[in-house]
Length: 333
Image (tube, rainbow, N blue to C red; front, side, top):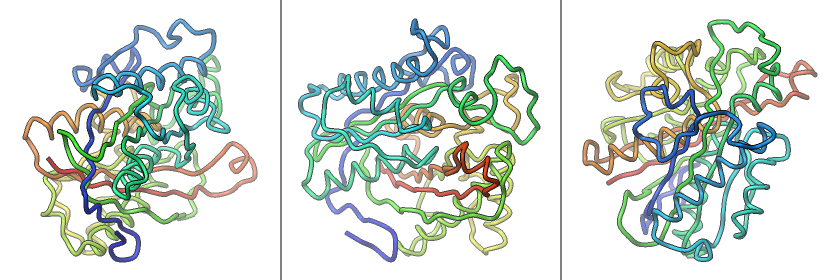
């Protein structure tokens, strides 16, 4: 049901029946290694290209989530997935393997919550009994497409972020045991004129704040409603900008409640400049770490806002600025 201008209230509160997070060797050295279902020993995953390795990660995440849900893949009505690669090749080729009806979506790094919100809408409306939402990213494929291949050895400024190698997936069902999806806010595109692809946090922060503000306004609540509010991959730079924007807009979001997946996933000893990023950043942290703590009863309610920079190599080459979007999903135990 539509609430306000851009939010959905899910009257039947679809259940996250299961979730899975898989990660690469660098993620295995990070703060959240224990919260992954599967960690790989190398970036290649025994494939002959990084792109094929990224596809394999999403396949593994989907398979793991389905097995944890205790159902067969034939029970899945729809797979909603997207990634950063041109024409969504990681997701589309994974869907070929999974073999269930597929809806390809693109929201850049906001794809995880875009997919989860749409999956909840399908289940809540009765259009699906089981929906699978997934996404992935790979450091080497993203560097090759958006910046420079890793073999080039290019230096990065302090504002740059490290694309997470990993994948996340969640099975959403009409009934069962697990955290429930209670609402979602679909973000609008916000572009503040930033064109530096090495400063994604600054580009995405206004979109994150805009969506959170809309969520509070549409649902007529405040930050006090949630135990934790987690943005997707703003990193150090974007997180600081978001806090400043909340203060400027007179939105009270206590620092103790506001976190960012890009700040959580890696340790201070890992050289990741401003933090983590990529589709898998929000997906793996949410479907692994955050939901694990929610299921354990540490929190009762959380709001996850996945943030995405909607640029492409073509738009960058044409000197376009970076339009950004953020989608929020509220989950409760």
